[in-house]
Picture (cartoon, rainbow, N blue to C red):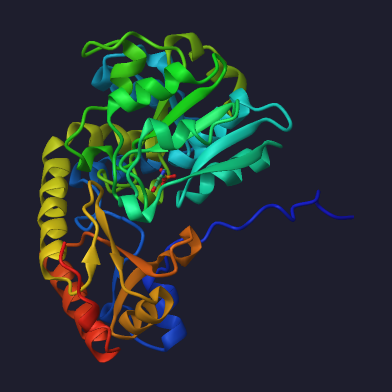
Length: 373
Ligand SMILES: *Cc1c(COP(=O)(O)O)cnc(C)c1O
């Protein structure tokens, strides 16, 4: 007996972890810094850590009240109703709920290339097919309604990532509105704002609620996560904000108790800790500017908590940096074999990453390819 035909499915390639790399190289984990998975260099909010300890003794109960409390708090944050918040096991879990709520067999989803692998994975799990629109390197991966609409062909879901992983670009709300307006009535535009806190931009929640001069729409949903700015990647907590018209579908598609007691309690505490998020965003802005100024290679402008760097040969450079103790993301699996992505670390981590990268580039003799940004 075999699983169904999974030959179209590909495994998710996560950034490599310190333990894993240290073990492989036979070295001590303390020698490494990991800037490969866009995690928060300040760790979780201290308030969330306290909440986790306090909630530990309650995990014998199903998380009913905690789930309701967190939905209400997140809804208040966005000024929407609680049933418009689809809590999930990470932003990835929210992507699955949107797939479940929309896809019939052979429906297609339109995703960016390069882009986040899980959009396509989730579609395939739900018997959908994947189509791509290209973000062009010559245009610095600029996102526009034209780029999306010229590839669009009646797809059921259209994914936009703003800020975009791994390039760091964003798409203006007016362009998103154009995409939503020009696509069919039953196409849902999903705006993935996993890195929204790091960008000086308004959320696309304005489009579904009809704020800031936009008309309210029932064909845009927004994804957010606690994994990045809130520093809770290990807990797996994220959500979709959906139009009022979609609210009722959640009860029909969600896993019973979509987020754990610990995740909900920590999420509630983290949501209140504005100071931790503000500090994280400030560190990120400093690190982005530092990397753009000091890396001896082309660094694209980014609105996320990472930068994309053209290093020529990503796998060799990432490997060499790793041997010097700095783990970064080789973007070959994103279809960018010449690029690495470096997460914004603390000041010290970021400086170490830059020094290490510049040394690697110099000894590889590619330092002369320096292009000004
Ligand atoms: C990190 C990330 C997510 C969500 O990650 P979770 O840890 O599942 O919340 C979603 N989209 C993009 C583009 C990401 O980089």
